[in-house]
Image 1: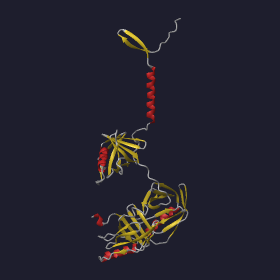
Image 2: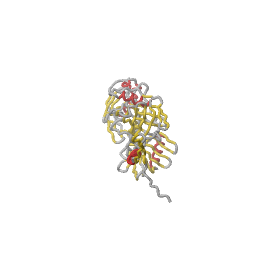
Image 3: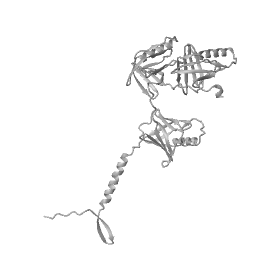
Image 4: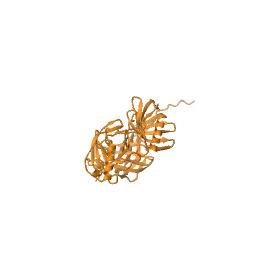
Length: 408
């Protein structure tokens, strides 16, 4: 029987002198350190946020934080905001800091390219703003790739990076303490806007009552909320007479409101759901500040029943500054005071200049001043760039814009 052979440690050969071979044990400490280092690097990579092409850019909004060379990007100038919003599958738009811009984009994996960029042509005089804008748009035009990591977005281009952070979601407007104006009726698959020149409002108060203006009459009643459930118990309203179509719209609104079963809030939007549809509202800006105050409002139409536009070649305006109203009545200028209570307004006696114009213009002016002066307006609504004042005998509809003299 052969004797058991002793297994020697693994060795490697090294040349000590020509013709003489020496044996050395392998340096096991070296390999242990190498393996530990690899394990550490793998663990470090696993802890780092994953950077990958975004699954979907559509519907996302971003704010530029830094731009320029990847190793030394510059911060966006203080007081400026540069944004990027991705919409409709391939549209990219936003503010470049001074001008708005628009383009379309193509993305495949991490590859990202934009089409020629269109922009407005304003000039901003603050130092560095136009230079920053030019650098941003040039970088966007030469973009090559895109990646996300958490709430950051990086667009790479030849020579650097655009680094964005996600735009925070807008705060949700509370149900109570907000004046809401109706935007659309939803019935099944159909959404319908309000009749032209009409306004419907709702205010949910902390005391458990809801009230507003239904297009012709004021209304009010108790309501109950439990989580997202909403019940409007009973509605009482005034008994003014209006055009048949306005009364029909009002009836649809009151019936939908009293059939409410739930509501949802999304930023400054309110949806009141009922069997078969929903009422969609938007939050009205407070009437004690812009855009109601400080905006030059131009009269678009006024009168009882079917409102009419002002005579061709005339312009009637109104500016509210918090307590005073002033403007042009078509021939003469006027001024006076007003007071607000929620979404209702009372205008005091108005003083005017005493110029004389053509009889038709004077008749129009007298009708306007009679509607405005010493009147209690049942509803005051700012709907985008439109102001609607509803009084006992009709409606005054204004559009935001500069007076003719200011546009020249």
